Image (tube, rainbow, N blue to C red; front, side, top):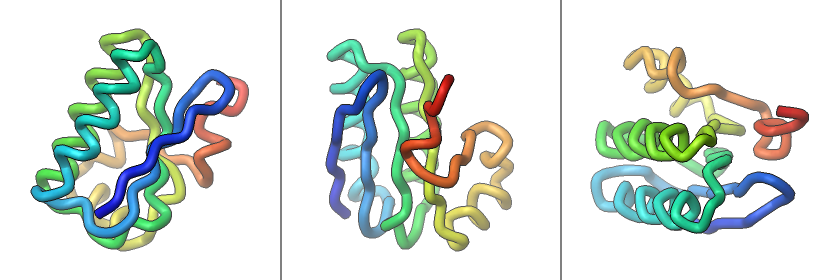
Length: 110
């Protein structure tokens, strides 16, 4: 799994490619923690290149959401592939994590 971060005007995009599993979840946690610590708590997670998410990956997303909200921001997911969307739905996390078509639309006007 690869994680990259890009700061935009008023928010940051964390792009995940590959499988978000127990081995990669700490990379996501660290990326979100670093952004929040740097004063950037508005974070869009680009999942367009994410092939699979397991329970550790879901935990990293929810933990990131909590960290961002505690800092006065939000964490939103974008470009969610169908396989990942199914996992989110089965775990009811689709009710917790806001899904947007693109990372750019996640904080568009909000």
